[in-house]
Length: 154
Image 1: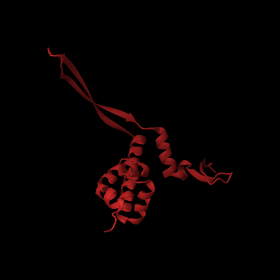
Image 2: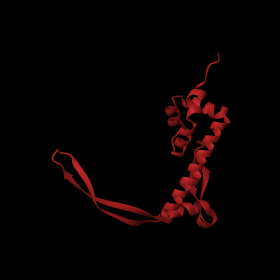
Image 3: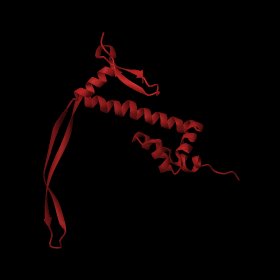
Image 4: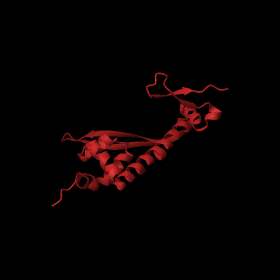
């Protein structure tokens, strides 16, 4: 009789949940904790099982490239959101319970203006020649830490 690995018992049955957790932005540590395994085991399974590696890559890329870039772009450009305000009245019954009744509902659109700082960051990174983008330079103390330094225009 061969021993069953935790990959088979703790990971495979929860692949759909792992995908959702990755899309929600959970860290490897948080995912391993929810699976009941160590983070090191999760990374070992990630290396050994291409299907798990694919799930991680696909879902992290989706969040980074689709959701976060989209949200950042919306913040830079501004957007309109629909809000609903509801008014209720509460009536107390003879037995002491409350009945909640909707009196009115108002739906309106609210515009959230673009963020100039987000616009500038986007343009500096996407069009560095025209907008004086940042460039990475090594720290002078040779610590291996990369710092961003603003480029001077010529």
